Length: 286
Image 1: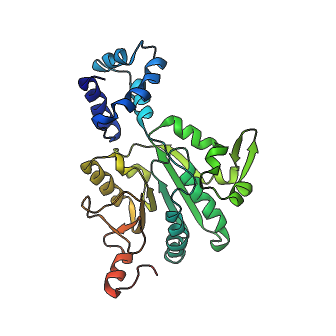
Image 2: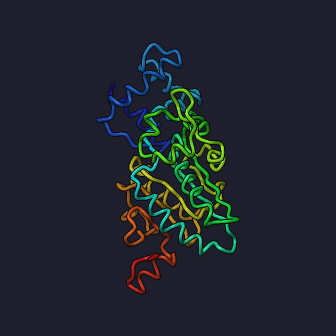
């Protein structure tokens, strides 16, 4: 692919999704966009690129962005964050939200649904400890196609084998031919919605917990700072943010700080979790 053509897609993806592509990813660009060109009736990727020069169809732009979006995910991905969610965050919420008994959770870039459904299963397992509580899980993604797949809650044998404990598979799924169908009671716990992380977040409301794992790694520093700054405005003052293992807020934003001894877990800077830890020198949320 010519550098000038690559730059067209690079700029388009940066503007529409925040995704940053380096020149060494040109092979990836070609492999993912050739099927899009074929779908739209272009003889070649070059022909589609020429169309992008003019006034491109909005649906074509959407297909290009969706084709380049990474949808790598799995149930209980990296496992440790979900242990922290269950042992630390839920324990805190049980005490801090005891009066209102309502918790809102946002899974940003939810992909095909494994992360929000993992959270839903954990909440279902803990239901006896939260009688009368309301847990709302909002899961968003930039891909309409992947959201449709997530809502269906149907997974291949390979997908359910990746991290999902066998007891939860048997308890919450039903085998349907070669696929596994998630039970309705778990699916109904998650509300899916289209959302671009570059857009204003106010329409989503405020949250007690935000999962934004393995997303920021695809953004440049200014975009990371913008996204994190916007999330800080939509999270409760004693709320929690989960990031991926290769992600950090350090050097990017002052809105969040790491929660000591809880890798991947962050809190708003004025959060009582951080203040109590700093004042007492003890492990936060112990």
